[in-house]
Image (tube, rainbow, N blue to C red; front, side):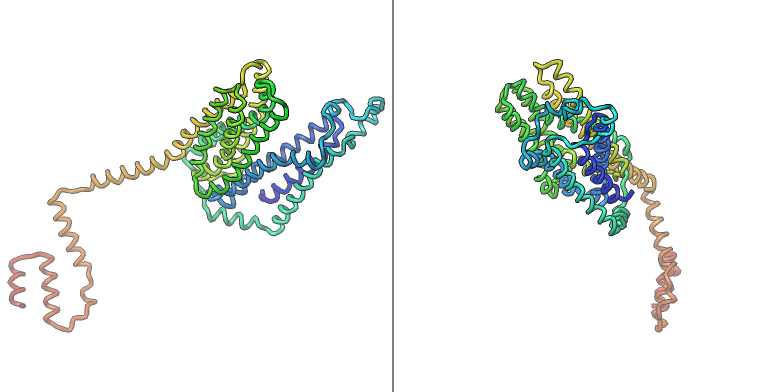
Length: 433
């Protein structure tokens, strides 16, 4: 499909979902709207990566970092802006009742069926969702405008001009990248989701201090993604992944070793958020250097990231509830950091193995060919003499303008000497001289 059409439709569906979420009055309807909302966000996440790769290819590392920086910045700023602009919403306990209006309990079933949508008591909730939905709607209009300008032709020409690469182990690389993003995104979302509860229950922090700990994680995450836009212009994606893996491994190890120390928790959390920032966009840019990513390929490893985002926090939530005295969240981060740190060298070796193998095989074939075709010294002399004779025979002496008969005779004599140096020819040369 056309990239701009697909992204425009997904953003339009996202905006509609944001408008409908705060006015849903039944759980079934809310689940349906959230499902459409999640599908549109998934299309946007995958389509944005593919569009960057289609426009810039393996030179799009800074643009990929900028795209994911916008994700992190929006996730960090949107709740804060909504809270500052419209104040605190109504207590969560009021929204967990079957119906928000007490009078609705006495309404008939027909009236309840007709009132699938309704304005909540707290209008701040509606304005918070509607403002973000309006912003997304405006962006979708810009994408439809690009569609009307037929920019897709330029995209297709750019892709055809860049050419396509396909690694010998293309499918194996995608499967490993699937697992890589599964554990990376799962650990990222798990830590960001449970650090507040972990700090309050395991360490005994105040809620305000724990909220600050959560903010510093996402704040350093967004800040380092912004800085990565500039770092990507001078650093290779593989180098950025290695640095991120080292930072994640060291910070998660300190979190496990000093899980009771508030100071260590603050420092390691900020380092962990900074280290996790550049891994996903750098991974997409890195794999593009070795094999061209299509829409299906990008969707495949984005599915792995989405599954990790869904499954790992759910499993860790259950385990943390069963073992409240153990820092299960920190153990998960450490195991994920070890797994990604070990998996990336394997992916790198697999990606570069076909190139080294082809070069080695080509060099060996050339050496074998040279050895098989190398003759004896006497044979070399005979072949050289034969080649010289063929060269002189192939020359067009008639094309040379010779006005001097003596000069012509010298040329003919030289030709006879090269063809066969005999004593008779040498005597004839002396006589002609």
